[in-house]
Image (tube, rainbow, N blue to C red; front, side, top):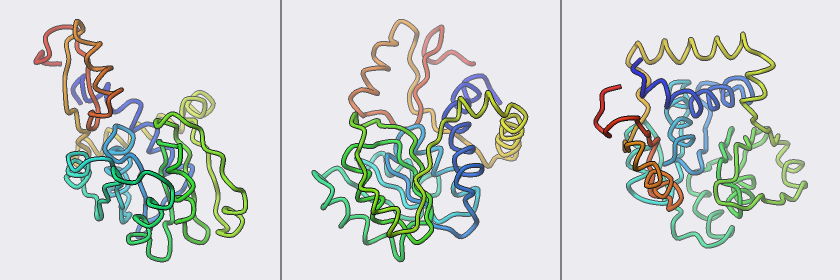
Length: 223
């Protein structure tokens, strides 16, 4: 694994392998919903979900991001850029939910969370990853009750510190998949260290697809 790929795999794929394998215990044939599917965590979820045998429904805010998810194997892609509230998103998700999602990945938060929880299936597992949209949602607790579903927090850093051997086993699995040609994280743009502010601005404006990388030398430096 080259240095750039190793840097990219560390956080997003480390987090999401733990989330899907150890927390949600995703099983082959289950349906996985991925919010924010065009970002680093989202695309890692799509890629790993497919490797684990799930049917993946990817939701993102642009056709370009959904194209990236599709390239990594997403089975169904939904553009939620025109959803201005939870009701519109609920209607959008309904077409792909079937009897409900088995597992959901939510790194977005804000008003996106509640309609996604409403789309969960019986006994589903809803993974709380982060709040990229900026607002931490307040969820009506009758929803997990009625769905008999679990809201599950994912704090990979703390788990890795408490369970270093299990974390090492996960990284060995990621390395194995990479060496077999099954794992190819998307690095969409490279920036020199002098242009690091541009990388942050690209993230802040939600234009980033997959992972961005800042290198010590010129952007095309071989790492």
